[in-house]
Length: 411
Image (cartoon, rainbow, N blue to C red; front, side, top):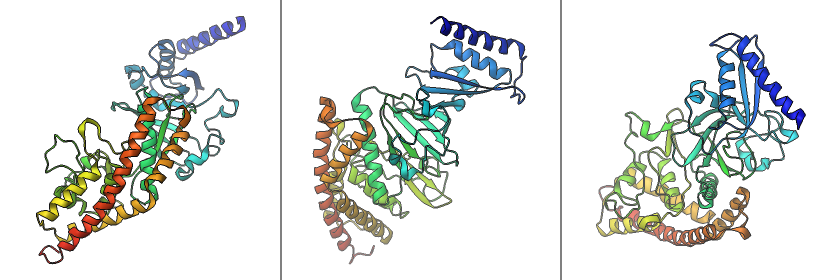
């Protein structure tokens, strides 16, 4: 104990001497040694002494790297942290294990989870280069590996197990898109208790996402897609003209061959949150990509299942003898074909199995589900079954709608 106290005192004196004798320098001095800080949590509001040390050394030209096991949940963006870009200097890693005292991670930390992301822990260094703090629901870190492949790590802020469990649905929906070849980001689960660069709180679960190219649709300036809106609203207070698979959605998804696929995915998983910031357009490849899909069959606050609304909308179009142009018909055909793929590949029993599988990956053992989790999972499974039969009816209704256009001027 005495030796440990002496070591701590020596360390503080050393940093103080370095600060006093090095002279003021506002740029990196290559002749000065690199300094590594190893701390349990960073940034942390209560650790002002460490923060002052780091900033003092940076001002004096030292190259600083910070290893931390996790961030502090009570952390608020401090001016000194942002002033010196300290978040770019942090590597979140499990340095308590002797095998991980480097900037690479253990190969035995379930690498199969990330095989499709090409993350080989024993070969590639992973660094955090950006932290996004303007979201209310998640911590968002941008990371890259040694071959400059970029990813996003997302972690729910709320402690509730129901909130943490949503990563299971995010993984499920992205996996469905991946198997049916719908353009979307790929997602893998970072389990509870396993540290990872960018995983803000090691004890909680998180997800890692591929970074899709392009920009958010809401950021498009001009061009044929700047006003695209494929969101299927399902809130009862929304105007009936904007609800579900409305004419605007059908017209807009006809503008590009990727859009009917994304709309079909949203109908199938009951995603009502396809806002313009939740899908990207990449001009160089002329592709759309869906992102952020942690909701499935959401019926909170009196909302209606998206699949049920789609059936209702198409029935109304048939009843009113509505006319569609050939581009809209082609879009509906792609939409219908994608729904058929989804129904064939993911009947309810398969989805139930995947929920249990991904929950186990995240660290939720089925036999230990708390009542809130158990109730949410059971309710979700019931809505998945209803959606599945709605989709089968919807496929038949779209066939009738397309057939009704054969003798019209629009076909």
